[in-house]
Image 1 (cartoon, rainbow, N blue to C red):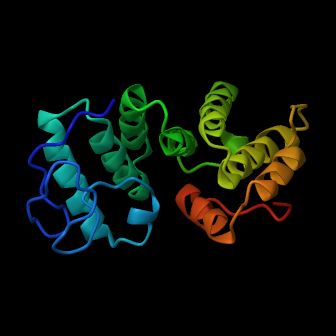
Image 2 (cartoon, rainbow, N blue to C red):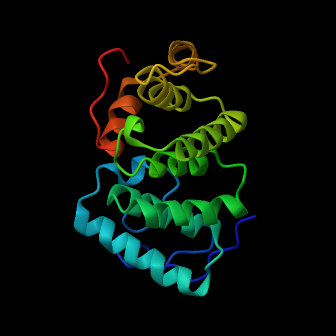
Length: 197
């Protein structure tokens, strides 16, 4: 369970926010980042300001799931994968029912590399995280990311796996995959999209 956040100022404008406020009532920007969409289009100086505000708040509330998830999203956007991974893992310990925490934790594990270039134990951990996210909520982008991992690691290395990437891709489409989610995923990953996906 997430601890209540006390005295967190809006990282965007510095205005005080009440406990539980996720959007600043003064500037309209997020106080707590709950999805990657919140930071995806933010300019780097603003992301750095947000990360600094969350680090300061975490000094007093180190186990707070919302703060850890928020700073992890900032680190992921900054491509500081190890720091992001550590913060996502802390968040997952407290909020084990949030699929985004597991999904983005899995994305961090690739560290900006293709699955093909990743070692098998890391691939297995990615699969574990994505399967946890899918158990919580079967979103199209979760199936799609797992399809990408299965394609690039297993199919490209001619290894057998079940389900294979095609089955997972079908699952992604059936679950409501959006073009925007796919574009955003490859923007985060920093790798090119395979033609077959």
